[in-house]
Image 1 (tube, rainbow, N blue to C red):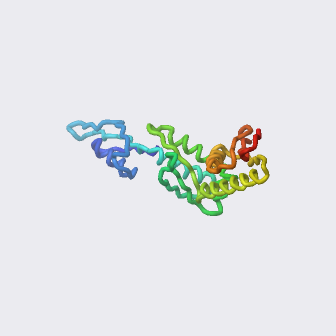
Image 2: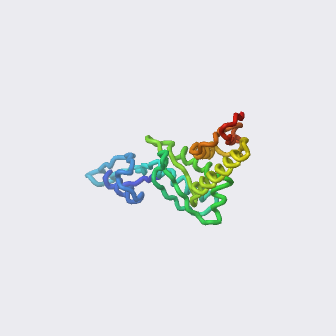
Image 3: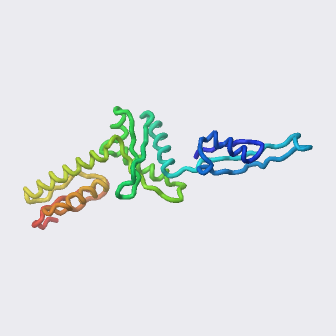
Length: 215
């Protein structure tokens, strides 16, 4: 949380000084009076100025962006640009990261592992002091959409193979959310059933052709 301590002849003057330094309107500030002003002898000698502490009231979105910028800089990946997109169909705010192309593979990680870890931390940090929680999904250079399209192709190819061979086909282990995507996508087909098997982090999707009783 950003905050400053400022002084002035009156509380209002001290508050305005702090707001100017913070660059925020009063509506986004929290004010704590440290010391009331007082007049000195004969109204002027040794009088005390007012002293206030003014802090910026951050929303979860503000906190999320600030955390991401700080984390990415500390990772040595440069200064990112973070844009908040519209709320998605699951009610989550999508944060998109723009960064230099040479650092994107590091930022995303193998199968999005680094991106997923940052997303987990963002949701914890951003909502730590929030009265109303916000849920965030994190993307970088459109990785999530490309990964989803890749999963759809993978699922269709595996389903076609299961139907053609008349036996189950099991995909490689994947995170819970990706398994959920595969299940939802293949539910639209009428020729296969899906199930998850195994223990995390090795849990995987099993695709079974219909009209066969496989366990």
